[in-house]
Length: 353
Length: 234
Image (cartoon, rainbow over all chains, first blue to last red; front, side, top):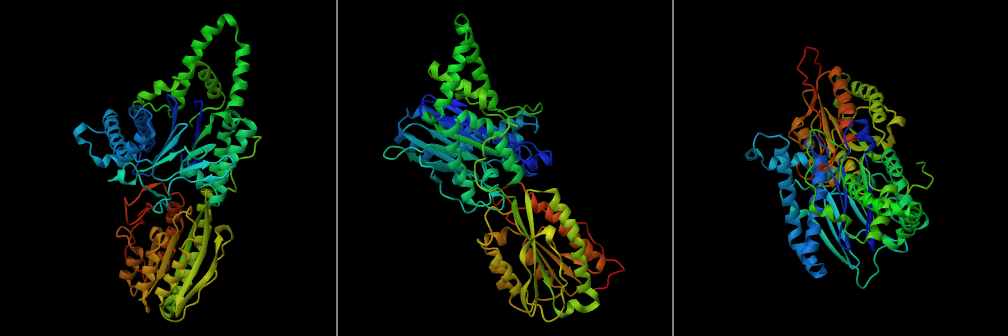
């Protein structure tokens, strides 16, 4: 989990019930990232068909690529919302698709799946096909990015659930637009959502389609937003995240059978009471003479935890794509906040099946 | 950790998979035992369909049937869970109004009654003759609908008088050919294949890149070739 004074981002993915039955890996990916005073969450869903044998890797490259780009955008635009909106709409779709393709081709060569780099053409992209959804969140705006199926929902303070992105009627019958489509940049939806002049949502949820496909009706799916907000208010984010794995597994078993990934961006003030509580308990247990050493160790553990949580299970024969540079900056926050967020990471952070 | 808190969200449900038999009941189906053979083949296929459904609890297989002869009507109108589905024998009489049958099916491919989260429906057309009405109109209505177009469409051609061009247009996918049944054994085999291999493929389709294969969004396995044999009677 990555924490920030305004937003806290957390997430979880589970291997689908049908994937378990058919001994297929989880082909979803989730990556949280903090960039200074902004947070980024990205989820992706590898296609998993026979034509896409490396789509789990493609999904990871998708979340890493979009997170890296959003970080770059935020830094280069010097946090100026107007510049960010302009650059995102003009440049992001092409950059996202282009960089993902470069990574895929490089990984394909690095894995020895072709004899030479010259032998890699666009046809190989399908083998790594994936969707991607992401949000860059600050106190003054949200920037949504989506390519392919999956859902982005906002939940207002009163529990009202909305879908900020327009519905793509083409996405049905298990068909989706994809990073590997010939003109994929044309299908990338970028939506700038200013928070000035209107209240910020209490919660933002990103999820892969295995989640929404598990519910009888859209209202039943949207109910998750209202329920998550209430659960966080009543029990705290850490407790909700502790339960998340069990809920998602049950949802996949009784619903779609597909992998499910859920990422929650929660206003920090909603999650904070629990975080403060856990943090205070840890502080009390620490011996004064060992405090400095403990902090150093925790700093190292916290960074490792964030990185490990963002990675899929080890695959000896497949090389993980290079992590975005921004990952190292995830811990670049005031020491007090860093300590608090680490406790939540250890309690109920991101894990991968 | 024990889940003590209520799971977020409303009612969970497996994804519906509509399986529709579209059966020719024209008078010619009453010749040489074709109708009896079809009734028997579908009846025998039902346990196999139940087995496939049991293997995939995340798909809810819902079966029904349309019959066409002089006009068309729902033979079994309610989408029936496969574990409750029982075949009612068809009777042969009249002409071959395929277009009207396709119009009936098209009505059911609209949203609603279809839902967006459904799995691709399976439509199985079985015919032994030439359409006697404007089948192209009914077919267009079906293929103009998103779910009609995305449906897995399979055709079984009974005997030498069946119009395979029409059946191929219904399939609308050059990679899939009509299944030729010239004797009862072949008919049973084809119906079983549709009821198992096709149903299985449609009930757990992985995501596909949009328009990567405009002809089909479900990978249908190839049936075994069925050579002409001396037992052919139709």
